[in-house]
Length: 173
Image (cartoon, rainbow, N blue to C red):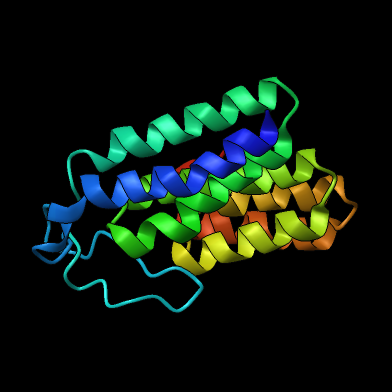
């Protein structure tokens, strides 16, 4: 069953490319004129022609729902593959809102922790922070993971940094 799902992922990507063929018409901007997409860690094609399609958010949320189902069925490797698809392959085709990308990196890192791969989780957090710099959500989750791993100095410095960049989020910490 897992192999069947993994085999369908490339087909889903082809479907995504077709669905978002019109998403290549204008620069990706938010309402305030800022770029809506920050480049991923890996070198990628020129995204200046990408635009956020109104269909991309439901599509990404649907992929995340599939990943959650896989986790409930104890198929965490398949869930990781779906999250990797969201953060690595989709941005090459269409601009994804920063909040959705941030969530996908967080979910990938948490899933790596579920797989007992702390090194993989750190890599996912690092990739996410390169893509969404100064993300209080990612930094807070990374601080929590580091504290669980016994790296209290690292965790404390991350919490202090979160409090600097987002005092409202850092207050409960």
